[in-house]
Length: 266
Image (cartoon, rainbow, N blue to C red; front, side, top):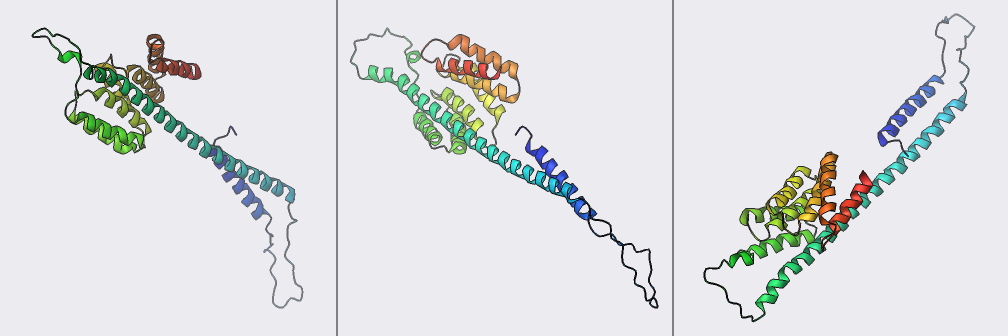
């Protein structure tokens, strides 16, 4: 099973050529050098070569059948692996969707509690209260939810376009970092995938929002993107940074996944 499909295809072509050669070699050979005249009463019979040994031909045909069976088995393995890979991608997407939902609930819970509580807080005149809470612009939450809904429905191409439009409409919005993250994810699951665009999306999130809750996951994902692009040294550097910075805390799952990836690939 270690031989590739291309190698088997080459073997099958060679075997078929040899088989056809042997078949032609067994055709009767007529000696046309003897001419017969109309007046001759003697008929010269054609000289036919002795039949070749058929055992070699039978062995070759048997080997050809074996190669065909192994090629069919390899095709089945490739199809099975492709199906499993698709399942893994979908499962990972479901996990991140659930994680994003839970993180969103955690982020909005304090604001809801504060809004529902009657507290006697005195704010000094001229104090900058805008920095205490990041408020979404009008229509921003609806636009983000609409794009995010397309992700949950696995309409990945449409979701990517929706997040792109969101970035145009709300380049500095409350959910801009989340949009960068999901664009990085979506660039990897569309067909064909765009690893460079995914790298840029994750990098923009890390550069512009270094304290955001999605930074650990984005850094882990960026490390994997570099690995897929062939820059294994850069990938390992990022993955080790995730492990060293985020092994402790509420979002240590990214560090666990980074550690597992390093152990499996380095």
